[in-house]
Image (cartoon, rainbow, N blue to C red; front, side, top):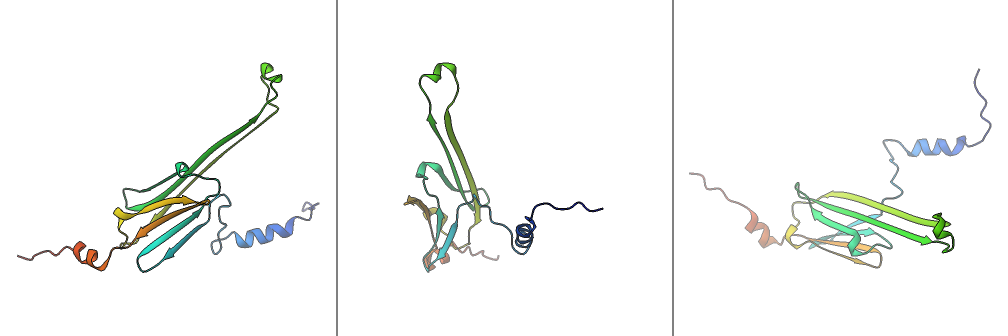
Length: 146
């Protein structure tokens, strides 16, 4: 005998199952949106981070020459009744913790020495300049055959 389903919530789960598969993976709802834009001279990475400051970010190149973008924010808001403070109970206390890390493989034409980043209006902007044609030629190593 099959148990009878009393609620009618089966329809949303069908759609969730359909969209959460190997063809269409669910995006992490807490992960910030990232845009990557290419021009002739550089790549630009934009990461949506409302409420974050430059102190909340750590942008670096790892040992495998990947770009690592890490973000961490801790905040705590307290509203306490001063009379009840001696008893040690909270009437209201809110805190949050946000942590995110994204690793991106850099193209070979990025000049890693000239990468820059800034935070403006809730957006982390990372500029990844490309090597110029002259720098590319200089970087090529010619091995003399003896």
